[in-house]
Amino acid sequence: MRHLTQILAVLLFVHLAMSMSSSQQPVIEKADQPKARADQNSLTAHQQLLEKGKQGKIDIYFEGDSITRRWGTSDEQYKHFYENWRANFFGWNAADFGWGGDTTQNVLWRLANGELDNINPKIIVLLIGTNNVGNKSPVENDPRFTEIPRGVKAILDQFRQKAPRAKIVLMGIFPRNDNMAVMPIINSVNSEIAKFADGKQIRFLNINDKMAGKDDKLFEGIAVPDGLHLDVKGYQVWADALKPIFREILGPPAKVDQAPPPTGDPSAKKPG
Image 1 (cartoon, rainbow, N blue to C red):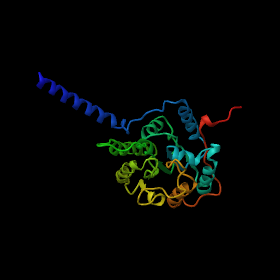
Image 2 (cartoon, rainbow, N blue to C red; image 1 turned 45 degrees about the vertical axis):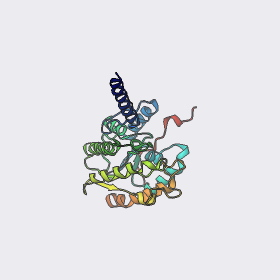
Image 3 (cartoon, rainbow, N blue to C red; image 1 turned 120 degrees about the vertical axis):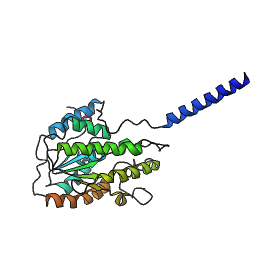
C-alpha cells in the first residue's frame, strides 16, 4: 500500500510540474494564418484603408503596426510625426497602411480582404512582428523564435502575389526596451527574416545599430517613454535609411504629391 501511495505521489508531482511548465509557455497562434481583429474600431479602420487605396496615386505603400501607423496618421496627437513624414516623403506619393496592435496574422487578414488590391505600388515597406514578440520573457522552446519568421514570409508571399512588380523593403524588427529579455527573440527573428532578401525584389534593412547600442538599449530620444514606439528622432533615423532606396528606385521626389489623404484612428474622431 505504501509503495502504491509513493507511485501516485510521483505521478501527481510530474503532472503538476508539466502543468506549470505548460502554463509558462506563451500562447502563440500560427503566425502565418490570417486572423481578423475582433474590435469594431479596427474593422472600421480597415474600411477606411480600403477606401484610401482607391484614392490618389500610391507609389510607396507602408505596411505594419502602430509604429508604422503613427508616422503617417491624421490623428491630432501624432501631428508632429506626420509633419516628419511629409518633410521626408512629400513628392514620392507615400501612403501609410499600418494599424495599431496588428500582428502578422492581422496584416495577412487585411491583405486577404482587399487592402493591397489593384494599388500596384512601386515600393512596399514592411515593419511587422513586434506585437507577435510581445513583452513576455522567453521560455524554453519558445515558439516565437520560429513562428514569427513564418508569419513574415507569408506576408511577403502575399505582396509578391498582389503586387508582383513592387520592390519590397523588409525592415528588421526594432529594439524594444519595455522588457529587455525579449531582445534575443527580436535579434534571432531578424537574423532569420534577413534570409528572405533575394537581391532582386526583396531587400532587408536592419537599422537597429542606428537606434540602439550593442546592449540593445535605445539611444536617448529614439523612442517615447514606453520604450517601444518611436519618437520623432527615431522616425528620422528610419527615414534617413529609406530615402536613398526611394531615390534609387523612384528618382528624386516630385514638387507635387498625389498620395491619398492620411487616415487616422476612427475612435479618436471628435463628435459633432
